[in-house]
Image (cartoon, rainbow over all chains, first blue to last red; front, side, top):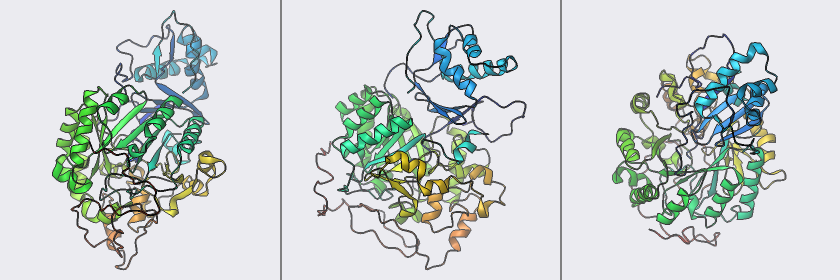
Length: 33
Length: 113
Length: 401
């Protein structure tokens, strides 16, 4: 499953300008549920 | 989630057009934070982070303006920042966080969920 | 600053949280993280639960992950579900399916902002029932059928990954596809009754690698409960927040109103407060000493020198705690093997932390000096030992469909 363009991946991004939006998938944060 | 229109986010093929009226998607909850705002899309389960108070103002103001440009103006975004904001909003449209609204609809008085 | 950096310092409100509604359960799964079975007589009342929902609404918590025990054995479950979604707090609830007959499935299909998650730990009855008890596989399948027939869109199937089911990943995916469900896999932790079976059930190092490879190759659309971030040290980070959110982004509210850092840490060391105290949940979240401590910047401790710390963040606090490892050291399942080393280095007389909170219905759990004694995994039907402190049978009102 590859991270989408907007997702918070661990790769370095060129520090041109700070992005205004960060997007990430969250699934309960270790919740069993 | 219930069996209704698949709420996968996204603009169903329509390109982002800042000359049109938009609004925050009703499937999205927006919560101001000291660092901007957290946005949670109930359909896609995606969490977004709006990183400036101005962007938050633009997104929450969309429903009150005739087009995106007006919302950006009203939020006091500097000219030099405009392209970045337009790019960010295009991304939000693609993610389903914001969506086109009908030109004929009255500005909605929806509360932030 | 990246979003995850903000998260590490904690948020004014949780993004979501786990809410265990009851310790009562019709099953007795061998690995139950909450050691559930018997209802606790001090359970939050319906009115108290609604007050909690009111607080969550005010704090703008986006959704609650409801579980237990088996949440649907609470007679007011459906009332609380409606109250929550009507208030704007989404509900995702986890169930073994026992109450999901055709009528309830249809009701759920009509309800907005609700997600249903069916627990399943084997793609076959043999593998599943060895962990969850006789008949539990059939119950889960029936619930999935009912949800599909009712047109409930995309329930989740939640699988705890074990040594016994890692080879069944493709079959789990097939079951999910068959029922129009989404597969979710989560990590087994040595929490609750899980402590008794962790040695025998947790995936081997080779299986962890197998799991990681499967997620990378075939895991598109598979949820992970953000629980495999320790595997990120293998290479490409898995999607998700990849950090421990306990006390920072999420927490647990238990059936008697106790607030813990996370559902895998039901132990007094991770107890932050109680919602019945003045100021309610909001005050616990914002002012508890435990949470303030967790929101301090983490240094990495013994893991600091490992190049993978940025990806794995030292793994899971609860997994370390309940295997008797220091919290500032490697996760017991560290993919580089440092956890295994640390486990081996524990003295033979190491006494593992045990929670006082135990609502198991079977005979008292084995008291184990160290984690090396095998526990038989075959289940007999749980004995109906009357519980004198509890007025209501936990199975009251349950029609075994």
